[in-house]
Length: 98
Image (cartoon, rainbow, N blue to C red; front, top):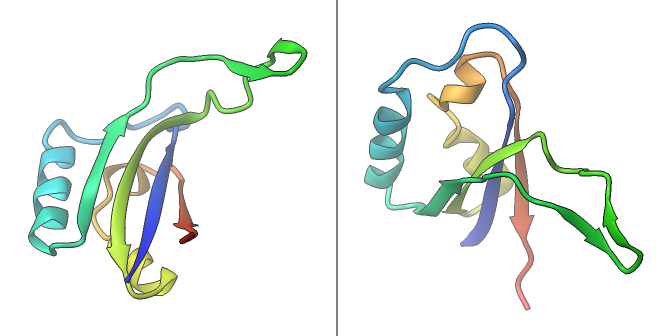
């Protein structure tokens, strides 16, 4: 199995996800046995060798880590994701193995 990250983007202005949508989605994801953790992401800084730079990732609001046999299987785990349901975007990224 491979590890994947779901990187949640900030929702565009408009409808937001229902109050209980996250708990329902995460409970369902845990039941698959493929959930490996996740969290909301707070504010921060972008830092380079020359110092603090314009924030290039302020649109990211959270992540979920899952295990799946392929990126297609990982994408199937997005069913019911509250941000997608509200019209937002989630990036799916594979975590390379050493």
